[in-house]
Image 1 (cartoon, rainbow, N blue to C red):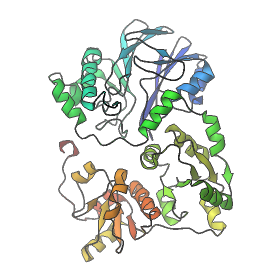
Image 2: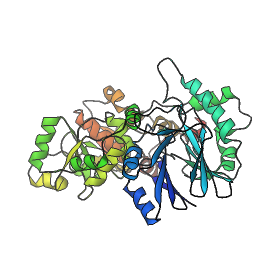
Image 3: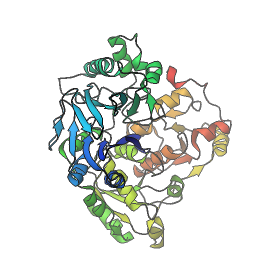
Image 4: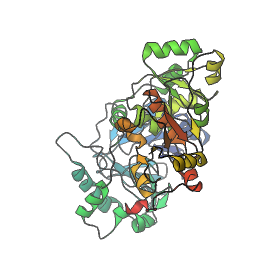
Length: 469
């Protein structure tokens, strides 16, 4: 038996490859399916099953394409209603895979079709659970994504989740391995550990949601407390996962069309496409196409695209580091953004060589910000999450979280320079690009973010541990 976690850091997502005696199951595959097919070929094995823990909201699964290419059966848990052919498992239904067994445990709460898959080894011993978004490490799935108009509230969903955990998962042995669908950084939970694998016994000890003396009402209150609104693209990804989607090969073919600077400019004007610059933030600061939006591949690229662009049907034109065009289109497609129309051939250097207009972002380091603060009461805008800001921030700084930047646009001065920072420089450059695209140019980005700000000795508030907020 082979069990392999295939973790994608930029999505904080775990897919799983399970092989036994020449048969393979894939759990929650990413959209680009060739890596799974190649693994099976290397093992001289056949992909038999594709298990989906639920209809994912934060990414587009590869289930439809993988089934088409391999003939494998797609399996969902009870209450799933996909538009394509699939096996809808009954609670406790078993599936043989080589010498092992995978059992569907219906665990509603995150969504009503949410299902945990229990793997039993060749001896019939409970070995591992693939818990999807039902149980994370340190947290559980948010219960507010599957609300139906007038039918289910987040409190009712949280109640289902409480029962699922206590009736289906907590009775399992402590040595059972927990393989979740997501880790820290995912918007599907709020308090996930950075680790991606643990034992159920350890989770029973330290996961707040698995306390043995917890009442259902206490669970509901703690689970829904502090939930931020989900990203706008989530329902659109659910729709794609339920109804199917375009083959990624077609998306890549369309998205990797090379466009000269003139053709690129014409395409942007004719289609209304967003010009998305995915280079490093330092390169964007030195020069970029006016009104382009920066979201760098080096950070949490796909989730930020989903949160900030939101509409998966939005046409996109790319500026990438040379050679990273296909990577960028692939990552966009993982979260359902299939509307990439091409990329700037030769990258930003080609744009400059063609003598096309470009813009820059003013930057200072933390020492220069310190001098400005000591000289004058300069406005500072902190674009980190509210929890980060409340934990510790520059005294008198404003909190304008990147996720909700558009809601804060009236707060930025239009007749005075102001400074923008985040934790390390990635999010503040995204914010700077959005502000400039809105015609707000009197900003200065702080390189190095809050880490360098503290090191420079700029006065900050007293630290409060985020877990106590």
